[in-house]
Image 1 (tube, one colour):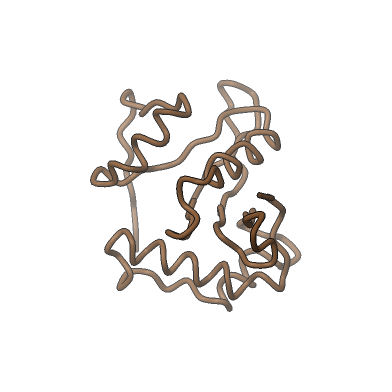
Image 2 (tube, helix red, strand yellow; image 1 turned 60 degrees about the horizontal axis):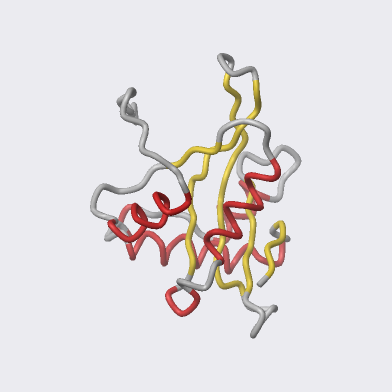
Length: 147
């Protein structure tokens, strides 16, 4: 199993996995991320998003999972961190350690905290993250202001 930074040639697979993730969460109709959006966000002069790609030992050329993330900064901790926007491992590769490897790779890249959301109905993800030692943040309520 290997984790690497995404390349331009991964844009179509990244978009496909984001859409698979949205479908898994029952929200495909709300997902407009496609290859064009992946290229624009990930592979431009000033990327707004970053990506890690995971592959299995059996088929190292086929993306088995991906993580989309972006840098954050905590003024209180005075450290850079990361927000995980998407973490997705294709069903055939789940329970093989790829999710953990993606998170470990990101953890090694940032000094501060790594944060993400988990949908309240995603019990498998909640259990996975708890096994890693991650805990829900209960002191804050997330607000969202959309157009």
